[in-house]
Image (cartoon, rainbow, N blue to C red; front, side):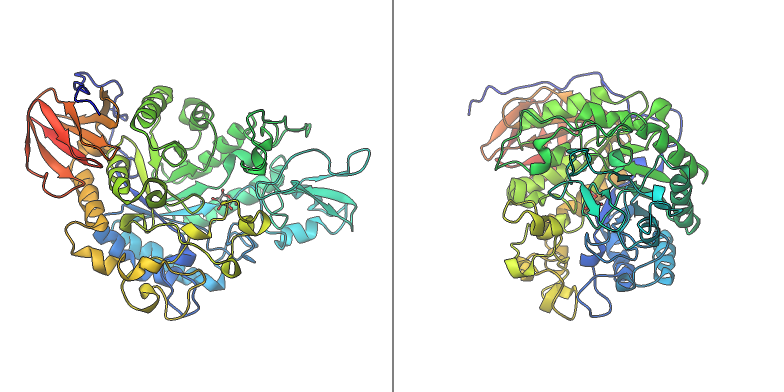
Length: 549
Ligand code: GLC
């Protein structure tokens, strides 16, 4: 590596912090922590986490510095897709507790200044939902049109070539009524027909049900799938698809089965329901797509979701130049006034510590918590939890069961939270539903909470700094010219300016800095309080936040 990689801090911020002149919303300033409820804390000794477990751990979330908790689904469900197959959108599954427990979580979270965001699953229900049971009774059933039923193709077989995200055709034959129904996900997850106004009304009722009970927001599941082409045209083949190595779902471009123009009308009407609660509730969309497509979900004049999840840090290669270009591009594509966001991990994708390795996971944490936009942190990532190998006999995820051995299964990222060094890591008194990581006696909250060099301590310090310094939450962002393995940018607000410099490689590197400053926080020991003058020298895998004078 050469010594010639130098850059200078650009003087003028290119992109403004947003919301000029008005108070930032809590979801702009704050950090969201995602809890996968089956795996956070078991309170009743069945090996599955639950709402009373979350209640017990709210103090931890407050200590950590989270502003909001997004809880993945806890509604009654046969658990074919672990809660994303719902039989009653307005209740709590017994495995997770009761509605009384939910109310307690909201009350106690609010008492600690923590907001509660729920998963809202509009695209489909369980095939055991009473609506679907009625729909499949006969072709004349009053609720027939609540789901998407089609005749077989003229020569027989499914109505078109659409695929299920979890493998195979998206169509399932119903021998009783002799038609196919559509399921974008499992055959046990039939798609609702959002072109039917009665379905929309029923689902708006669900939104109101939870907002009335005090939920602060919704993460809207698979929202781009909700409306399909009304002509049911075939999806075209994907020329970039590599048979055998890529996910078979990607063999087609989902031109007609996903991301249809009418989805924006559906979202606008959903958003109007949410805005009916006074403008302080948040609506977040889950959309996996190209960045240009994703930013369209801010909607016309900002009437779409408050933000569509931005999964670029999950998907892109961990390379300073690639990430730098992606941040600049994303910032430049955001519509005026749109609020950005960043995600490093979730219950569907590999753990960040496994993707980038433990050394870079610290750098990644600093990146997530210093970029402009709301960060979402996945439970356990603050400890550096890694993907856990799941023995074949313990596989739970239907995706892995349908398409074994391709690395699609999500169990490895859903293993129990590692609280302490006791049996079952303090998660449960009994064997948990998924195996614990082998490193749990070492990698856990208890072991890390007082260790000044731990991943948990780094997260707490980053969260505290972000909370203290408006420059890091609401401040302007500007890219800084850097080379090779270094990614750098500034955040500024009022008279305060920070330089964030991240060495995304294992070799030492340097960056020319436009003025003197002091290291405020570093990912490696020993840098804090160090003065910085013209040249910032970074050790391998080191990230620093420099307060510029
Ligand atoms: C979303 C969820 C995923 C679920 C799917 C179907 O992508 O994040 O876990 O399986 O939707 O609901």
